[in-house]
Length: 220
Ligand code: SAH
Image (tube, rainbow, N blue to C red; front, side, top):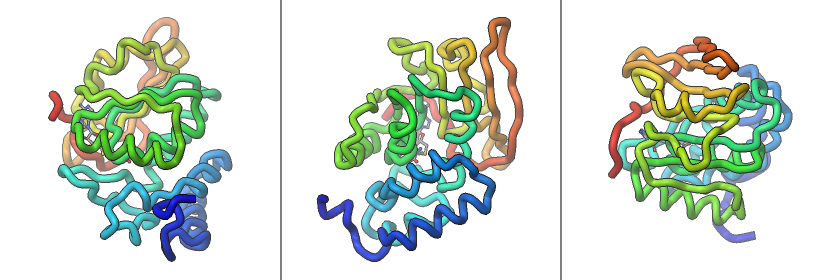
């Protein structure tokens, strides 16, 4: 195993197991997801200075004013995707960031299509997934508000930044029976929403208050 995957104390089974136990206490029940998160080395997705805090239940900076999502949020959004759609074949992720959520999804879906607007973050994410030998993730440097039309429709869409309204193009790129998990709202008050596309339209449900970085337009 390569050095960065071995790490030091913070990669110990005990540290990771504590994170898993916390997720269970917070209501995450899917063993499939808990197993994937137990076996995915979260510390390799961050800068060395913060790696020792990788398994804490908090969002941490990854540069460019962005954060890696808190473990609970990654688990919860993934669980909502899986429980609604049963089996995930094609998943669209908006907001690759450091690639941690992509790595979790890659182990639960046939293929992940991940869009990020900040090029250096996308490059880092590619490197991390390459190190983990996860090859079923495709990356696009673009404004995620456009989705990724070439590969639509998707049976799952996961959005990791909060727009004030659900982007129309993302709704259009959902398969019938597909599900989208998306935070919606302004800085102080956002809520996690679940959208299900039916034959006749869209069912939108509000789930819980959340805090995400804003969904920004354009790319850099
Ligand atoms: N799941 C990521 C979360 C990163 S934070 C992780 O665990 O690391 C959210 C990410 O969404 C940031 O990288 C930000 O640049 C990106 N983002 C924000 N608005 C976007 C948009 N319109 N299109 C694509 N990515 C966007």
